[in-house]
Image 1 (cartoon, one colour):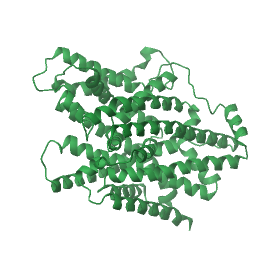
Image 2 (cartoon, helix red, strand yellow):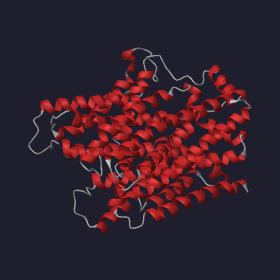
Image 3 (spheres, one colour):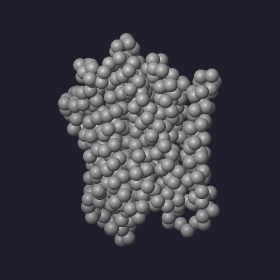
Image 4 (cartoon, rainbow, N blue to C red):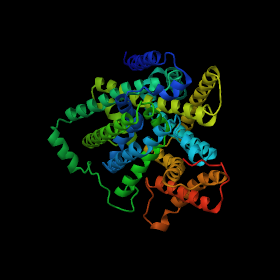
Length: 489
């Protein structure tokens, strides 16, 4: 009976998403797939973006990270908060001013076609890797609790989940994602709150006693004051701000939802409300992590960080809470993948295939869009199999490491375009955006030159962006740009 209950919940959840897709994708065109017809309510976008930003990684790995670093992750969150205001009041006005369906078209307008294509290519690379890491993490947990009892292998579970996501995103695109992400964010946050309360009751402590115990065990320490440590406060705060600017403001998936809002003012309201909400939500996830660690200590448990939350919920809390945990986990999974596959389809069609540069009939656009969407789904499944083979447990750091190398060139290209009026020889751009990450890698591998105990942290993204920026500046002085090769805005 129990073995059938969890798959039944997953099926009912999927049917609900399918129903939303049916009603939101009526009369959908390729344009509405990419832009939502600029009619998305800002408050739904703000709420739904919480689920997209947090994903299954936050749901499982952030509570587990308290095991190693208490609340040091919150230093990053404070940096995120600062970065969202740069996105709202620097980048969003730019995107609305030029009415961009793909944010990377700004690079074409400012720096030429090569910058545009390379910028989009880095997004496609980064978002594909990041989304599949998230997908891998959550399927691993679902495999243990839902699919393995049914006799399904990991590869079968992966294909099933990918097909589910395809089914409700294939036609509606952004119009569907805005509504499904809102629903899924609600379920994820509901699961978070219920799990915290259930753990508190199971420990038999009042909230005052619980907080005192957490502080006594130093499980709520936020600040890291060692400059050599990878999680030193200023490394995390500055790195967090630039992670937000790059992974939100320069990310087609996140901006696709924002620019689907009718006006700039509403899009900015969305971003401010979203940033404030994330401060609270991340604090709740870290509180959950602290309570889980305390629970493990009191029960003599030795559990790997990413397994801490699911293990305790399954074996020590009431079955009803475990069911809610599974619903929350599913809700964390889908927003982190459905939006990614939709944004990747949009970026590839608009930026690489040139939907906006070519006069293609609507039927042809729909056909190409469908095949691109299916191809990315197949690529997601293949990469999940590869991650399973590698089996790296340090998922959160892996995602930020990927971002540091792939979003750095984007940060440099956009900064150069916005902060300077210089022109650059477009033939140098491919060499620059490849050289900067390679130099960053060499630097990180030789961190000992800054001190034997020095470790690079989240500032790697900033260094990568700065190197790209400096190389672009040098290129603008060394080479004389041919006429019409770049277009000043």
